[in-house]
Image (cartoon, rainbow, N blue to C red):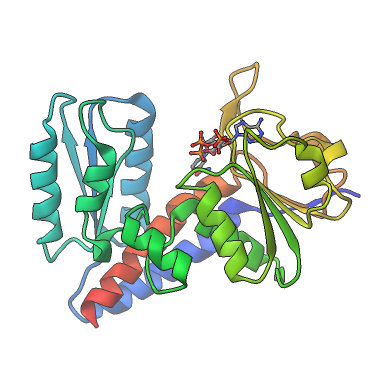
Length: 283
Ligand code: NAP
């Protein structure tokens, strides 16, 4: 079997065009959805991420503001900026790019963002909303994974999903989203004794670890759907995921590539969340 690719670029293109159409409709009512991206310090990877996010907003007709600050910015000053953005009616979504410099308490900053503008979905109120099935913003990466499953019309009811990784931004929210769609969910982590025994039972596997070849072909049940969240570099310095793509695609029914899989979907879902924040604010 050779797995079908779930193309994150193609799906993103489709969803971003839907965002652009909805943004136009809002603009006609006098509301331009706005995202503020706050970057503190000069982390190279963060600079690339924020540039991509701002460009994606502009391409979809959303208003975006990039605020860049020196790494020496104080926590109090950053909290004051967040508060100002909370009160700015032209801004519907606020994203503070992580990681923050060590002298700033990232959780404190995230908690300072108004839950109504928490388009990253990292606020405790957003996490609580996801856990209880209430309306709120879902973290973009696992939300993108759910959209990828939806794009292949995958019915999760009664299926066994195995999530590898339990971070607050990917693994845990991913597990909750799968659970909400009636999958039976297993969460694996660095303390899991026999990962292969778990993954071999899975109809759906989400790998969100940050280590190459965490999932190899011998660990996958024939016909399983495999979503690869990982972002790593191979020996040639090229971007690769957590999954041994060449091997696993011989066994899985569907697989996401890296690059061109979950990555573009993460930014797309940020646009979706920002648009939804603006729609909610305008209602
Ligand atoms: P993280 O916070 O470092 O979490 C990694 C998780 O993997 C932890 O729960 C850890 O377990 C678990 N783990 C480590 N080694 C393991 C092993 N050998 N077997 C099973 N589980 C293991 O990372 P993250 O923020 O969730 O990100 C995970 C990966 O996704 C990274 O490569 C990151 O760059 C990528 N990512 C991609 C996107 C995207 O847009 N494509 C977005 C976010 C993240 P413990 O909890 O026990 O330590």
